[in-house]
Amino acid sequence: MTRCNCTNRHLWVLLGITGLALSLWVLTGCNRDAHASKATYENQILGSPKATLSMAPSTSRLPFDGPALSLAPDVKPLVKAREHQVRIDCMHSMIQVDDGVSFAAWTFGGTLPGPVLRVKQGDNVHFTMTNRSDKTMAVSPPSPHSIDFHAAMINPHDKYQEVVPGATIQFDWTANYPGVFMYHCGSPAILQHMIYGMVGMTIVEPKDGYPTEADKEFAIIQNEYYLTKLDDGTWTTDMQAALDKNATYVCFNGKPRQYVNNPLKVKAGERIRLFLSNVGPCGTSSFHVVGTLFDRVWFDGNPDNEMRGMQTVLLGASSGAIVEFVLPEEGTYPFVDHEFADVEKGAVGLFVAEGQALASK
Image (tube, rainbow, N blue to C red; front, side, top):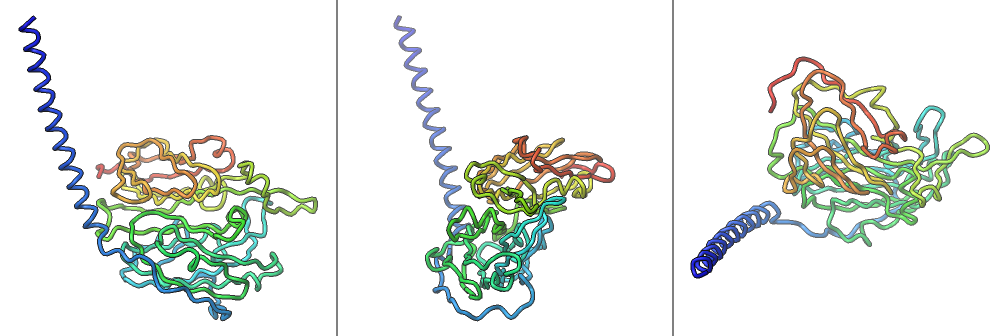
């Protein structure tokens, strides 16, 4: 019995030493990560000067303007500037969703989803928005609108205030955190404005760039439509269907199955980077590419939030991510929302990988 007790004591001592070593290793790692994060996120700019609101409409004929703006799925290279003049106007526009299905949408810049804004961590955005809904009365009656940038850290009561038809708001914000963020109209009822189409994406690249080099980049924005057909054959939004979370369509970049008819083309073996945003407004997204695994997943588009070798990325409404992967050989690779009811409603597309397989990167 004495030998057994002694052995037990030795065992507990060894376990205690091992536990202490593990604790020190974890604490050292945490401190190292804390120091890295401090270096990454120092010199943040919180808030900004008060917004200005005027009845002077934009004189430009362009619905949106600025070299940092793109239309998904294309993403322009990062503009090497610390200051960005960005204008996205509110417009009521007829949007065709599917064959024989169009409706009077409320949009940012006349597109649904709105244009993709790409800047770098630490950059300043000088934003201007005119509410042009008074100029599109033939499409839909004028309405107050606003904009809410999830990438910004500013006073929403000031910057995200409603802009009446014909008026213009101007405000500044600084991109403090890297990531993939949504923007949307924040006017009540917010759900109504979002199902009418007032959604978009902001990409904020890390100040030191991404830790990998991509061969191709695409922006994929998942959105839902809640529509009903009227007796005269026209279509309009259905608020009750939205409240019931019963989507008519679930789409990538605004149209169901559009990348089945027009696949996204890449080369076999290329590293592909997708900027993903589920703008909802009500459903989740289980994004999956058939035939490969996600080499890297950065939740909310921030490389600090890295996962490896994932099969599916789960995104709640307003969540974003960056996924990187390689298509291993020549062929056709579907991408879907793996909640297959959403596939039946349009959330499906294709990558076509051309050429011979290359060495993995």
